[in-house]
Image (cartoon, rainbow, N blue to C red; front, top):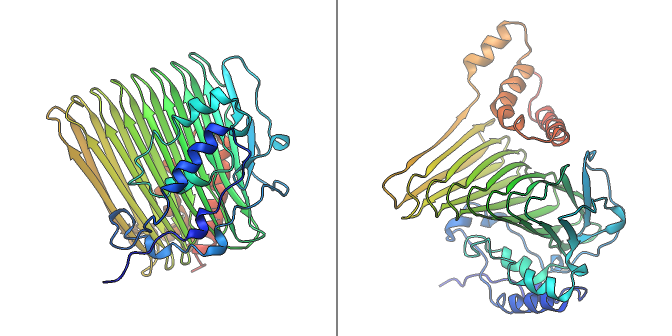
Length: 428
């Protein structure tokens, strides 16, 4: 019988020691659990479409140094925190000193704060479904802690610029924990970019804990290079009457994987998840989402769109779980997919598990190609075939792009999408 591959011992190499003692102890404890950690294979249900793209060479196990200049990124119309290779760079960051709002690197927490944070890290995630969050828990060099006291409102978006400098092979482990107090408000933008061309792994975890009435918007923009394997996880816990809104825009690479898990634990909580993915060449992108309706009277709405060109591959797996006590739940999931070539592949799997009898739930998925009748119509009106393809493809995702509530992110996403169309469609 063929043995199951396990994580190389090279990835058990100790990380830096700059964190407070409670976080060092937590990291050590979680590192011990990585020994003989099985790697996903095609027989691993939630990795069956992506395991063949995972390439973890030993030279990628070394933590990338937190050095180098930050490169070009979004024009930031708000506050900014800069990370290089998973470590916060204070001199490149500009963020507020406001009453009721704490923005601090893990390494700057005092012992009591670090002890309290250590008890919460990982609490928002099901690690059996987001397996590589365990690796992040054992290897994070630093992280960002954001705490909003009850009623606190961050008046501008907070941009987290994650830059990976890939001058040599290695790995980076960015980590963020957001604690949003009762009736607080926050818009958080995460932008992932890279420079250099060495083969690297970026393994990220972002967690949100929303108290009663909290309102959080999360925007995630993945634009890393072709040499970056990115495996990320986002966990969300929501209490009574809280609202969480997520907008994810992803551009493909050798491996892109994002697990987004939401638990609606308080009555009246609401969540909205939007996602757009485009892939070309031989790129791969895999989105796995999970929404758990634990409490009654909660609402969830999920809309994801994938576009795959050339010989690329996109995956969407969305799961909604309505627990027994989650009566009066409303849940809607919709996934639409567009194939731009005969060689492209998209796999989609919407799932509903319902254990309550008084709920309203719907889910659906479609996969198709551009409608030749619509293309012909536009061409017959004097529009070039290439431009007709671009217009119809952009229309397929524009509804979701326009819902991104931060203009700078919308503009950046649209510019990158224009580049995608330029490379994908040839003049006909």
